[in-house]
Length: 91
Image (cartoon, rainbow, N blue to C red; front, side, top):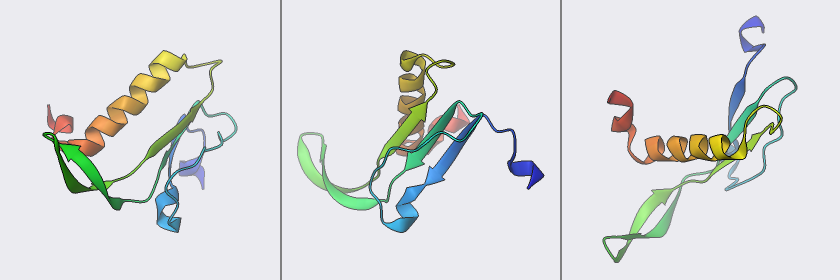
């Protein structure tokens, strides 16, 4: 469809297939693609205690001819921060 063309970045949900992680392949003409894995309960350290948390993975591929690795890494870090704390989008 027309509204799905000429994108810059894609978000793909590989978790819907029960996949935890993967290396997404860039779509032609795009700069990046971010893959979100399945959400699963996992042991997580919070305040030096092990608790069960819902955890996912964020994987990304970027065209380094367009985006420097440092910028791409900070973008993935920002995506992860918003997933952990959605209220960050409000401020």
